[in-house]
Image (cartoon, rainbow, N blue to C red; front, side):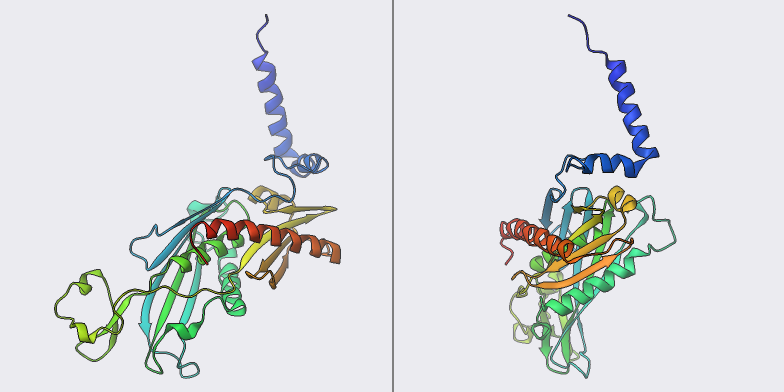
Length: 301
């Protein structure tokens, strides 16, 4: 029995890799014509998704979300502030998205990534428009004290669909959030009590405004799916390579009742016709069910 020609197999593999690097669009289109992508996924299938909660012990809430290789770490820190005069009964959420150089070769040290402020703004807009968080729930004393939540999202691996993964990590971090205990200090000001202070006898029991940490009530939880439009094809949850080759991106954001919260198209010259929009929305609804199941297994409402 003859041995398999490993040198021939290696030569063929090198030729395929060279063709992929030299003619990336043609390489992908050959796969698309067979309704398959180079990573083996059907066109409308998202990558495997993992969510882990509470990985940052110094944060009041945190989560790690992975969609394929795209990895996001979200952490929330709560601080007591004076509410604005326009909204004396409401707290506030500040969102910051970070792309350190470790996340992608395209991000250079000392130069902030162009995508970072755009994603920060889109996330803030989504949280405002879908009313996921009742800001009145963050009020401590009307006109005097309220919670300020600082949400920082760090991209650890940027392999496509960054907004989708960032939103998922943020939602999971809010579900993990434990609002700290607060008390009156010697100056009569409301302050948060950390673990060491909780054991400090100088803080009298009668001064505590709440006896234990509490969770936020989340409603209308948003989910996102980014798709690529290329000729007659629609690719769900693209990788960074796919985004760099076929640059017409459409992101659909739905809330937990499948209502459209946001529809965003960026890059490319392809027109998003009504049939393409309907297809993207249907894929987003299917993806939303998958994410609800993942989060539901972690008791996230």
